[in-house]
Image 1 (cartoon, rainbow, N blue to C red):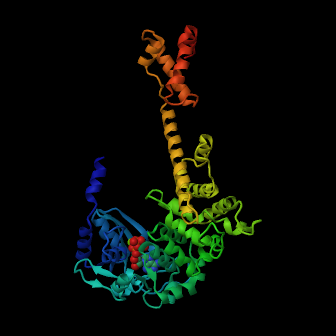
Image 2 (cartoon, rainbow, N blue to C red; image 1 turned 120 degrees about the vertical axis):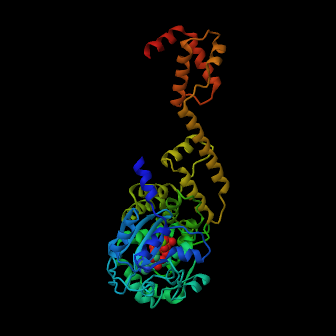
Image 3 (cartoon, rainbow, N blue to C red; image 1 turned 30 degrees about the vertical axis):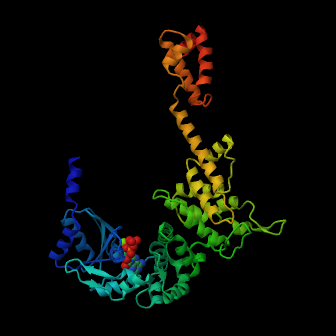
Length: 467
Ligand code: ATP
Ligand code: MG
């Protein structure tokens, strides 16, 4: 306990880190997301990214000298993670030239100035820095103007930049979703020409960027950008047949338009954001492979949720999403066409039980799915939600397993003096509630049972023997 508070006292502030680098004679610049978001007029969220003239081992030495908890995030990239009072800071030694094109992980050499470092960054809006001591701003590529215009532009020759590290293509698409920016034309053309290189990236890096894209504020725009540059066959080939896969008169869009609209529409909170956006993205995976012409001449998608669930299982495994998340997504895809009658308690319970505690996620998916259909099904979903809420309340009451009758009511009912018999009858009644044989709070039925038990002295005695 004492040790823990000692450690907390030792967590240095950002100011202390800045002073320590200055005292050691090193430049330290704030760069990346924080500078960008500050210029957009947003409060600082996320980690602080610093660039410094100090080599990596020196960064570590300085941070440890302050008593900070230090993590080497990527020794190869020259990044040291430092836990500060204000949150995590990533201190990266100035980057220099030379990335090995097409390798799974880029090679990094160290540079000698902030401008050289900024020239190695992915987009002009991220290539802005501010000196932590003098406050001097550096913006050699017009990043401020691009922030104002809402444009993502690679600094320097975009083709070269994407060849150096193809992950930048996906980062760009991710920033479309996060920032709501557009990709500048020449940069976009270069992305289109470079998509083949995405195949050289490690699955971990790719999956992390798709995840960030899905969590952004404008996921439809990000997904559309991903499709427009032709990246789908390279990073999400399972989804590649969706664009252009026409549907029937019940739908406003093709499968892709419907899918991206569903991702955009699904209601989320922080805890459910990732799962629900993924579920929306995958829910109609099975449509292109099962599409067939029905007797009435329209497109049909019979059994698409079954085929889709099989595809979702394989896809989530390939992307190395967690086992639990993969299983849940598969289940959500499998069940998204379920449509129980809200007035049939048994069907509602079965619907809920199948979802393993995630019926709210399924309902959110069903509502979002419906939002881009040509017909409106809100009333049905409201009724289903109410029915599920009711079952949940009933089940909670069942688990509380309270006897519908208290001691006073039992004495009045049977006209008997207080005694251990009260506990025995209450025990029996609550067991019946727990077993689902007596509805919680059903006093009338409870009275009938209590009369039967109380009327038979032998029965009471017998239950005493048993216990
Ligand atoms: P976020 O708000 O998500 O943290 P960010 O812009 O800070 O966004 P980070 O991944 O934290 O993104 O990276 C910090 C900075 O490092 C970026 O702003 C960018 O300047 C640079 N950077 C990160 N990855 C790359 C890359 N693959 N190629 C070039 N520069 C990169
Ligand atoms: Mg950052």
